[in-house]
Length: 553
Image: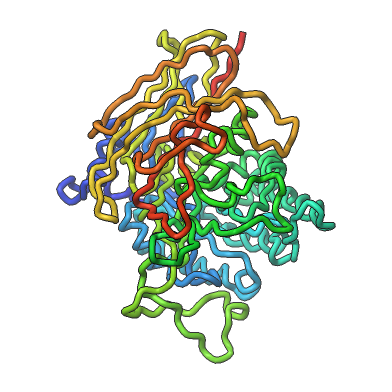
């Protein structure tokens, strides 16, 4: 089976038929030297894997836009059909999409997963230029949720069903996770066992691949630092990261959901199940991003400071789109979700219905670097950490390379590692393509500044619940508010005396302030909005994954 290329990547599709964003993406593809047959070489379904330059980890990349967290009528709290979601995702330029229905008995026992798969196949046929994965939103025993997904294959449904029945915290009743709860140790151990089981299915070839990403990790404060580290360490090739920003980004549009609403619907307080070491600020979003990611020197940085990759993503978590006029359909007599595993099809009305989400790709985007087009290539790019994310279509493209200043050796890109000698000078090259057309809010976004964030690598954390990285801070800021088109920044990296990592962050500059750990660490970072007044389009950010530098000699 041949997977057709996206229109913007297909040389047989004339440029005159593409919109401005698609033309911009085609230009990025050409500059990567991958336009035409080279990129199409990976178009066979499930074939190929991302490659890199000899000796380097510096591949020529094209970034595919996607979303790994979307819900349909096969989730008890959503309302859209697969067709509605896939068509919207295509309209907003997505190349790949993962349907992640909630675990529940109707899904596992009432044939919901098999019926869902039939509709997945239909959606793939209707949207043949998009990579559509079937996944699951796993209730982690004793914690929150994760996305679990694998590429198309003969066991893609069986994997999810077996996993759900054996390891889902909701189905098993393994939901308590407080530090003093008697079941906590059992629940946390079962989560680790689940990830190891998934790794075994990949190792034995039962499925070609499988990935897991933690969803909205700080929403309830129940994903403790030691749990997240335990998940990563149990299966580092499977449990690869977390949502840097949650869905529900429209949840605090002024005048919509109410005066207490927060972006991401992060509207909770510490509970008996929460980890007690998190500050109160952890329960709200900062610039729309989860506190664990948004805090320079915080939890994400504390994990990166161990010298190990942990990827961040951004996605829609679509359930109910803001200002949408569709409502849930009506049940037939005797039917409910537990005995059908599926909601009735939605019904259109003339009145806006409750909701705080955006369509996939409408606001939140995850960009994954690949060299070929296919399901396994997207998963390989995610695993390798070739990932950057943005809100509000803030930029069309970001490409980052770290090289030695003397020009010797190969450079590395996002997720990569550069091996250098102590004292060597490095250059971080950031190539940005600014946004080429208005976003769905009717505005042409403008990137105002780019920050380089640098942290020391200290090795494995002695305290598994440590959430601070005291040696991480913003070390360089560039005002780019007057730049348009494609521009390049070359930033010298000096004082390379110990292993370190670098990551990049940018924003529209409309809303920022000193970070949680102080202005000397983050002088103009994302900040919480006042409840009920969080217009997401007026506070947009982009983040990249890190590049690591290993110092020897």
